[in-house]
Image (cartoon, rainbow, N blue to C red; front, side, top):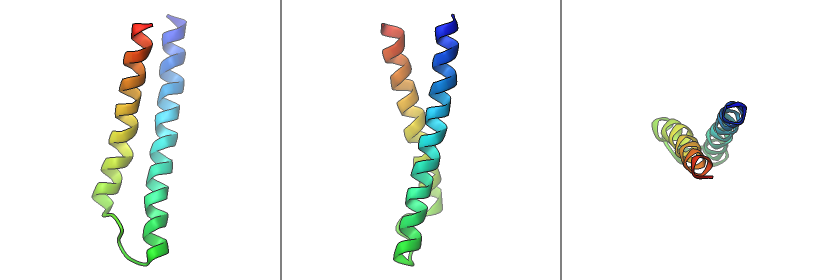
Length: 65
């Protein structure tokens, strides 16, 4: 039970950190090019969905062990 709580704590922290990194990466690409490389809606979508799916895959792997 304690391992599951630890998994969720660190998994959510990892996903939040990854979301911020992705968001800032795309934002810096927009600033460097002085033009929109990627729209804000796509930027937010990728920043949320990619870490979420990564967390789900890690959870499936964790449950099977």
